[in-house]
Amino acid sequence: MSMDETDRRLAFLSEAARLREVERASRIPTGRRENSAEHSWHLALHAMTLVEEAPEGVSVDRVIRMLLIHDLVEIDVGDVPLHGAQPANHDAAEDAAAQRIFGLLPGRQGETLLALWREFEAAQSPDARFAKALDRMQPVLLNLETGGGTWPEFEVSEKQVMDRCGPPIERGAPRLWPRLRDRVRAHFAALAG
Image 1 (cartoon, rainbow, N blue to C red):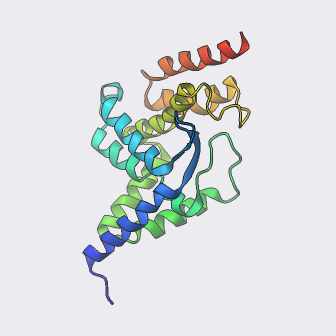
Image 2: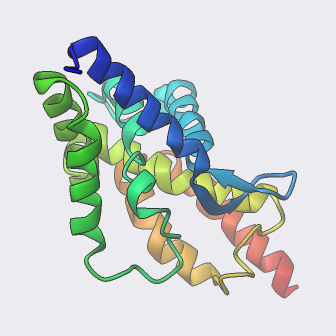
Image 3: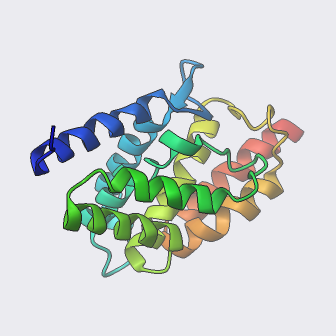
């Protein structure tokens, strides 16, 4: 049976729903691990809520679209925790996953989303930098909300949080980073004290 454009869009949506099955390293306040679909939704909400903190010229609508699709590749490659080891050829595997998943959509629509995903990954445009900042910020907030969350599990130090999360957050959301930085410092100071 031949698929028309609507069938292809429905197939994409069905495939995208599998993102709910991808477990992330981060834990939510109830203790269970967050799934990647929840993460994407929460990031879109961050973008909508923190729009006033975005640098001038950022299109929050584009940022929300980026955030809703940024982790769809995890359907094929899984979640790789920021503080874990990145598998060999991970970037190539993610790109192949993006081509497959966005290729489910009809021509131009799939090409547009693939380009948007690649823009997010490159983090060169103001929109992508803000989206990346939020993507790094949200797990830090989750860990802080849960008394350190999975940081002890991954043996994450204050320096690692500052080095791995600070630069992309500061680059994409410079007004948000000092607030988050101070919370991270207070958390680790309380552990040491």
